Image (cartoon, rainbow, N blue to C red; front, side, top):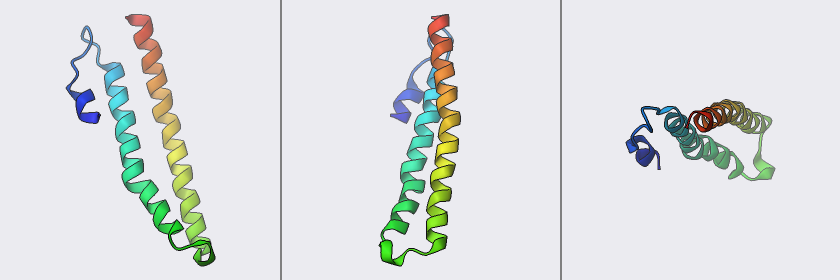
Length: 87
């Protein structure tokens, strides 16, 4: 999907919405390929084998994802609203 979005031409010279979508999808791709994998590896240890450090690390990853996601969501929603007003 990211490749398809990148290949789309700007609409009337405006690529803001497309670029925000690319950044959002790139973020989610990274989350699924890296961050969720890290959480799954912690969970695979089993609840009886979690250490306090494991729990702290999983929580840190979730907090990082949530914080980053807020920024990407805000950027994308602003781009959508601006695009709708402009076009």
